[in-house]
Length: 277
Ligand code: ADP
Ligand code: MG
Image (cartoon, rainbow, N blue to C red; front, top):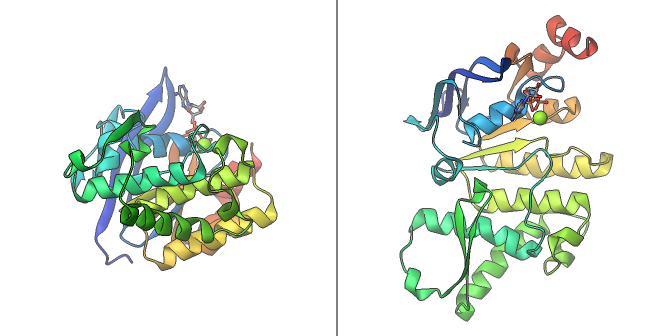
């Protein structure tokens, strides 16, 4: 994968919050088809790194390029339009929308990226939802033709069927009524269906039990096998080891070690960082 083109280039990325140096000169390249995991103790700057890359917060300095285009400082909606999709540490779905509608948002994002705002008059707009920007600003279409309804149905069905535990039985349920694990599955499906160039996942298994975690690992291995380019923040070291081409370990806002999963997890500084907390 290291010969593959660089999808995400990060150089000297820096962010302080009132004197707290949350991200300190972070640099790395993520190549097409590669899975990089960021590990590190709580407060080490992992989520902030993800939030900087996805445009949810603005860096103080540094370079972020997606496919050689500078995106540092762009708002999240624009970064999203460049092909980045993400999930959130605590999981974010629209509780007042169904599983289908949530996943649909990701699909519409993809359609819009392909033919932005073309044929708009064909679709009566029921409502605009200024989204939590990972899906861009999405449309929920009004009545569609039977063919369109069928197409979306099949695509969403494919996403939910990849998950065990009957997410498929819950497609018409409002997501606020779902179990935590099913909300997180919905979120991953929404990100995946948009066919992102770059997928950022912030602790996708946080709060999940062992079998749920194993299932998410299976899903992520599937995404990896499909050639997705993934930046993952994750604590569970077995999952990280099974999935990652490379691991970055952060502590106090800095990358303190990087390399293969085995190199990083046996690195004395990394062991120290975890044990010291
Ligand atoms: P991690 O994801 O590795 O647990 P974070 O990136 O969330 O760590 O946080 C890194 C540090 O930055 C922490 O000390 C955290 O309290 C601080 N921090 C994160 N976001 C903000 C913010 N919006 N305002 C102030 N401090 C923040
Ligand atoms: Mg975090």
